[in-house]
Image 1 (tube, rainbow, N blue to C red):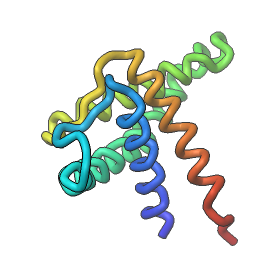
Image 2 (image 1 turned 90 degrees about the vertical axis):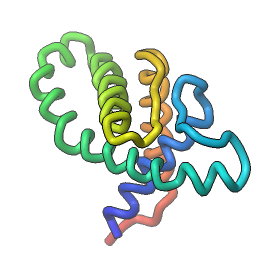
Image 3 (image 1 turned 30 degrees about the vertical axis):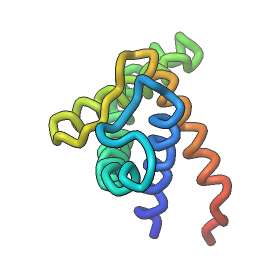
Image 4 (image 1 turned 180 degrees about the horizontal axis):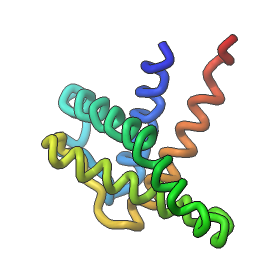
Length: 129
């Protein structure tokens, strides 16, 4: 159950980011039932890739850049999150999932959106005992 929640949290964040930003998108139809049918599986696969990148690669990058994170008072974490989203887009392109992020600034804003939506989803869910 925890894995499903984790996956759906990332998927919700990605969906909202793709909906709000023109620089983040999935290939396929733009509206209607056809959009839902064509984009749900790529969305879940991209959410899985983003989750794996955030679980395995991001902590290593944060550890290696810890002195710079402290020096910049944590603002480097925003850049790291944006780079992880760009890496996810690159991996999704390698797997031909049709997920695109157009540039660093879209990745930066997109990573903020994904973080806020993920926080909101986790807050809305009931607490585990």
